[in-house]
View 1 (spheres, rainbow, N blue to C red):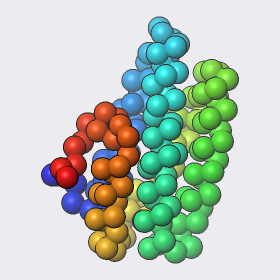
View 2 (cartoon, helix red, strand yellow):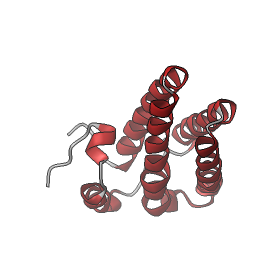
View 3 (cartoon, rainbow, N blue to C red):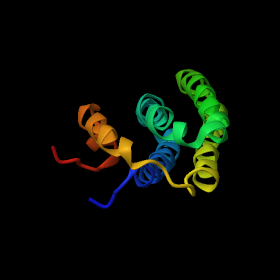
View 4 (cartoon, rainbow, N blue to C red):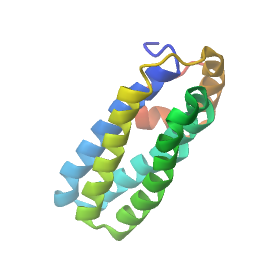
Length: 143
């Protein structure tokens, strides 16, 4: 497996999120229903998996430096849910930018520091239980 620790995993997921958002925004004009479906699925992955893993396993290692990023997760959840449910392209574009900027800032400000390897096996166990992880990311975790 090319992912060896929590930070590798989060960077990989950031790439998956960028790609899925890019595809969804391309599709949105041609097929709004399909575009919104992909956005909804990606948003659910962001808030129910990705942000949860960061908050539970990774951010505690960074202390107060991670607090603003954890707070962003609340904004991302609420704003994304409302933007997608309303189907407003201008709101959706802003939401996507917020998520992508947030992820880039995590990589620049947090993911440059070492993180405890102790949580890695716990994260792998959670991946195995998360429905559709492989479908969304393309990555398989062997049992």
